[in-house]
Structure formats: structure tokens, C-alpha cells
Image (cartoon, rainbow, N blue to C red; front, side, top):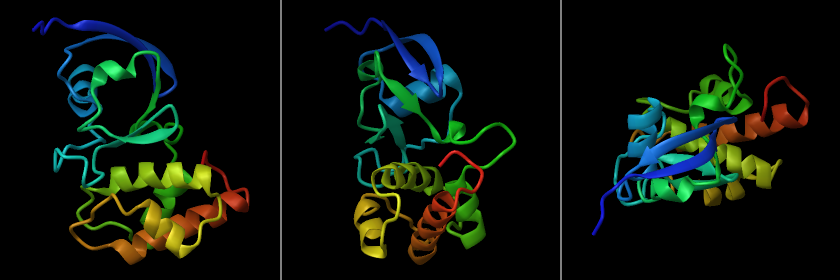
Length: 165
């Protein structure tokens, strides 16, 4: 079995990139080692906690399970690129305003899933938020605040606040 690296081309946070990837590397390992992007964090290693969530072609994926070679030709967005430099995305801002985190380890995954949710459902109710985020775990139990943050981001987006949500 060959472990030779393969060259892939994809769009990362809005810019085209080319990189060599080993066939066994997952997205988290790849983003950290090749691009110094540490927002997606491997926690459970089984796709059960959501800490490693990134968007691939607009859909959330578990970066600990998704092989990096599958990024070839894809558009990848990480938490590091949700907003313009020096600004916060509406979701990031709402998480801060609502205190929707404690230790912060799971926060990037929740923010990325919330972004995907708001694209699909711009005005979600509490149950839709809970259902959509059910695959993300917060060991600090900030769930009520997270739901409130998503609702706040939806309201701000609907009201036309600044940001890219």
C-alpha cells in the first residue's frame, strides 16, 4: 500500500491553494500541518462531538473523519475566515454577546454548524436549532446560551446588520 503524498487543488477560505497530502491524513491534521489553521480541533476522533467541523462546499463535515484527499476541487471554509480581518461574523459576535461558551474548545465547531444552519434556515426556531446542533457537544453545558446566540445571529442577519452571515 502506497503512502505517497498526493497533490490536491482546492479553495481554502476564498483563495486557491495547492498542497501535498498523505492519503491517510484527515482534514484537521492537514489544515493544521499545511496551513497553520487550528480552529477545527480534534477531540473525540469519531465524528461525535463537532469540535472539528469545517464547511466543504457549504456543508458541515467532521474534519476528524473526512480524509483530506477528498478536498481536491472543493471549497473549504474554516472558522478563521468567517469574517473580514479585524471584524467578527454575526455568529461570532452573538456567541460573545450571549456568553455562549465557557472554555471555548467546542466553540469553533458550534459556530461553523450554526453558519450552515442559518444558510439553510435563516429564521430557525429553538427546536430546529437544537436538532441541527445535536451532533455538537459542549462539556461546559452552555447549550441554552448557544441556542440564544444562534437566534440572535438570525435576528441580526434578518435586520441587515453588518457582517457576512
